[in-house]
Length: 444
Image (cartoon, rainbow, N blue to C red):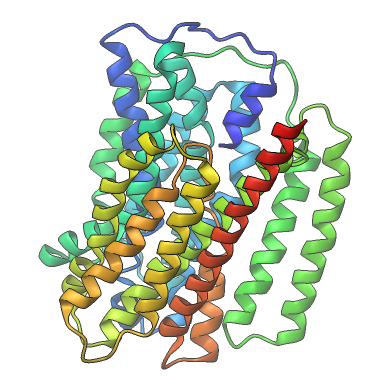
C-alpha cells in the first residue's frame, strides 16, 4: 500500500505504459502472487503451532508470541523505507532482494535451536517480507495494462486477505504430516522457484533521482522500535515503569518524525492523504478490522487447544474463517457497485464482531458444529468488509494479546477474543461514520 501511495505522487514515467506482453505478464503476476502469499502466510502460519513451539522451547505462552511479534515488528519498521527505496533503485530489485532474504531466513528459522534464535531469524525474515510487500502494488501497476488494473489489484487484495486467514489451515495440513519446523522449511523451495521466475519476468521500472532520507528512516525505525519494545516489555515480567518510559519516548520520537516528514516533498508517510477525511476514516476502519482479525487468529489456537483439541484439530476448526472469507469477497465486490462501501463495511464488521463475541462465550462442552458456524460468521463478515484500498496487516494486536496472556495466564486467549470483538465493533462504527462524509461531500 505504501508503494502505491508513493507512486501516485511521484513523477516517474512507467517503463511499461500498457503493461507487459503475454505470456510474460502471467509469469510476472505469478511471481508477485507467490511472493506476497508466502510473506502474508508467514504472519499467521505459526499461530497454530505456538503452543507446541512454547512447549518445545520450554517457554511461556506470552514469550512464544515474540515469534509473531518479531516478524511483524520488522515489517512495520521497514515497510515504508523500503517502499521509498524502491522508487530510487527500482521495484524489481527490492522485490527480488526481499525474496532472497526471506527465503534464507526461512531456512534459518527451520533450523533454529532456541526461541531466541528463532525470534532473531524471524526479524530477518520480516525484513525480507517488508521488501516483498512494499513494492507488490507498484509491480502490479507496471505488469498489467491500465484497462485491467482494477482486476489485477483485486487479485492482489484477494491473495493478501485470504493468505492472512488461511495460515492456520495450511499449518494444520503441515502439522498433520510433519514437525512445526516444516512451516518454515516449505518456504525454501517455493522461494527459490519464485526468485527464478521474478528475475526473468518482473518489469524494470524507471528510477527516481532523489535520495533516501536516512534521518527519516532512523526516526521511523526508532519510533516503532521503542513503541514495540515497550509494549513487549509489558507482555513479560519486565519492569513496568521502564516499559512505559520506552512507550513515551517512542511517542515523542513519533512527533519529531511527523514534524520532520511534513516539510519534505517526498515523505515516507503520506501525510497529505491523511488530511483527506474519507481516506483517514477508511484507514482507521482498516486498521481496527485487521487488529481484530490478527488478535483473534493469534488467540484462537490457544483457546481451541484450551478446550481440549489437538494442533491438527485446531487448524481444521479454524478453516471455516478463510473459506467463508473466500466466498464472501467476490460477492462483496459486486455488491459494492450498488451499495456504499461504508454500509458494506459496517455490516460486515458488525457480523465479524458478533462472531468473535460468540466465540468468546463458547461453552467448554460446545459442539464442533457450533464452533464452525461462529468461525464462518467471522470470515463472512471480514470478507464483506475487505476492500482493495485497505491493507493494514501490520498491527499491534500481537503485543496486546501477549499482555493479556501475562495478566491472565488461564483465560488470556478467551479475553483476547472479547477484545477482538470490541475492536471489530469499533471498526464497524467508524465505517458507518464515512456515510456522513459522503453526504457532506455530495452537498457541496
